[in-house]
Length: 127
Image (tube, rainbow, N blue to C red; front, top):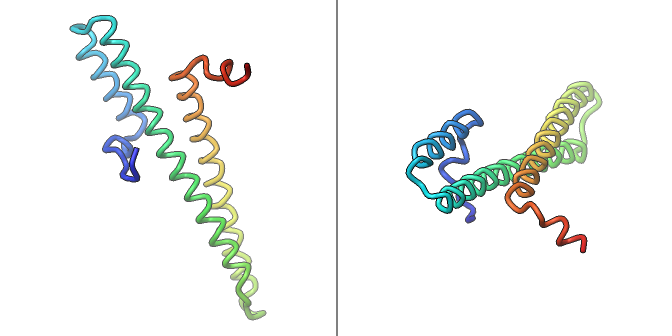
């Protein structure tokens, strides 16, 4: 996909599930088994793409938090501001940890969706 985010990328989980459900339910009755399988695959690909886009954004947020922390530690500061800067550094450190945890969760979700989309790929790579 291009650098532009897909229109569904900003949907939260419930909105996305409602969209997927309405597509699946609304079109599922009139589709042949082959077309339904293709639709299910397209939905799964869209879910994977959304998860990948969100994981990429979370990775970028984690990198930005880390960069802010490094910039803060690199600059010289007067003795009277030490406690304020240390408090700021702790806040940035906590934001960095949260961003990294979110990125890890989203990357794991994208990996699970990829595995669901391509079930035998691990066996092919291993052999």
